[in-house]
Length: 320
Image (cartoon, rainbow, N blue to C red):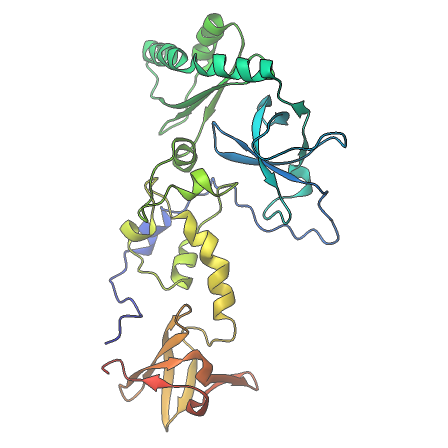
């Protein structure tokens, strides 16, 4: 039997559904009609969270890759690093764009480095206060904003946390605005980073701009074994790459009969039982027990029905 189709036992679908993440950013390609994104458009990155931001710059300011700039973020005015120009932005909307305030000055950089040196001590203070109040909170990251007196504490918890008294204690220590952000396991992976099962750094940490929505349907469409250990990442949720590769599979399957398609050939009723979009091979099973592997090019759709024509392709028995 050929090994181009996986036959591993699947897990219960209700259990697999728990791997999906309802808190994902869930961005899709923007289809806003005639809107044209401004040029030049820059792609910037917040180093502390690995979050990407798309921004324009004042007309008198040209940015080079690697430049540090001050810009508005959802948490406040802060520093970001320019990754370069973005010619064809994907997955963003016009409302996502911000405008760079100015280039970072040597004084800004010096302030950033000084604040970064305080992160470890701030972490010790935070943990002491959490212990004092008996809160179930796991500290993930700390970041001091450069553009305004404010510190962000990112934490995870299995339940909602009433941290009002904790905030009062932290304000008394740091003498600045305090913002606590409870994040999910996928955001935790994006911030902390690590290596995936492929041996490469997490996509969410080094590649993606946002956390994409990922579903079990995507794993099915990619003909993957529905085994949680193979389709989930270290965060315990479905692999981000399932979403990135989903459209590749959608495009590859165009012009191919879908799984379950029924047709009549060689005086026998057949059904498509597996589709491999990458190899362009389909497994078909006949009512007489025959199991064949056929090139997608052998199928033609005529009058809304799929027909098999071996004169335009090849087929083989899985036992060959």
